[in-house]
Image (cartoon, rainbow, N blue to C red; front, side, top):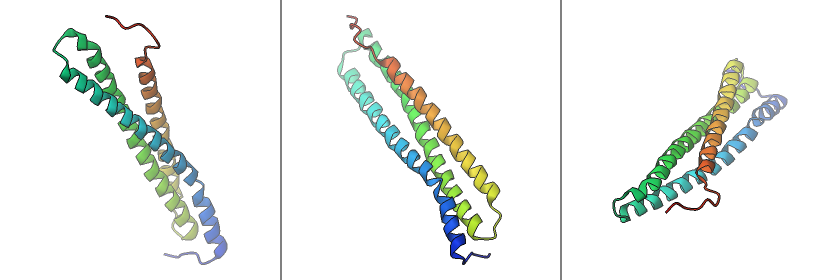
Length: 150
């Protein structure tokens, strides 16, 4: 395997490989946001479960069970979003490595870089769809000042 020793080639390889790092920054921000949402979902589910356990068995707890069902669906969407974002980060990391190696060695790696980049972007877009769906579910749960049924 031939490695480039020319400074210009190595510099160009670094410049080429750094561009996808901006996508990694967006992915890390999204993971932080989505992980925060997961924590809120878990906290709310624990609160509802404690209320259900403390209350006497009756039909009055039906809304709490409905909310738990929605929280479970939201949790699944958030977990899928985190998994997709993690796969995206891995694929973008592989893209960065492939671009750098393709530029600084004689290895023909353009197809791998192209496939890993497009796969990473696809994972990012699917994660955004999961995030949108979870957000829509969350806002559907809001009552916006409607009086409680007694």
